[in-house]
Image (cartoon, rainbow, N blue to C red; front, top):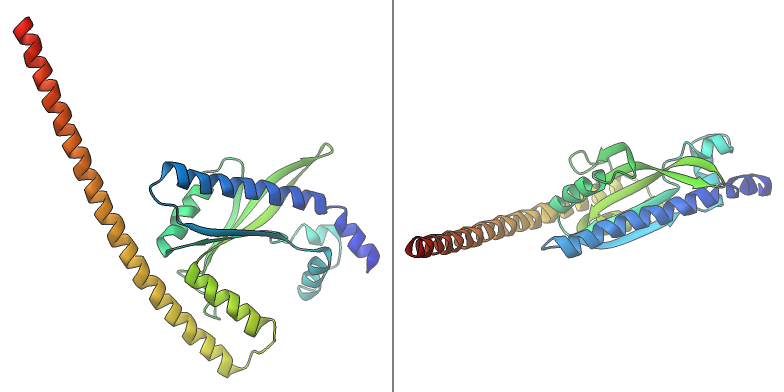
Length: 231
């Protein structure tokens, strides 16, 4: 086991660097919302990197040989979880991520429109980040999970009480699905309110722009008339 851990730890530096790079990209998006937008939908951000022991456990569950090649097949050694306020924000954030020219989108899974059998919802993106260390370049895959606060509440508690405890009876599975439906109902209701408010602000902004335009045209007309008087 020790030799296996040592073999994995040799490549951990690449994953640690990828984690820092991913954090930089996400924080840049966060700052972009803060400075350039009227509203920042990001509630909080959490990043993590799996330990060598955790990586070995996952390889065993997947029945893969414990080797460097197997490790490189895993997409979630480096992960980021971004929690936003509303469902619409998830897709807004996805577009921001896709605009980043420094990363390559490998795969996307929309568990919002197509929830898992358990009832889980969220949006997962696998990205590839090129990392150069000691003259060696490796493309490191990282997983980004985007959830609303409601989705995260359900997923965190389900993981604590169901997944880790191994309690997979039909009765409990049914209860978790029922809870997931209630969470989804709340999420969609709040999202509708958000969209209504967003639409209202857009109309107000358009009205304000129209007023400014009229003032500008009025000012331009007066200047033109003044020029004619002196012409």
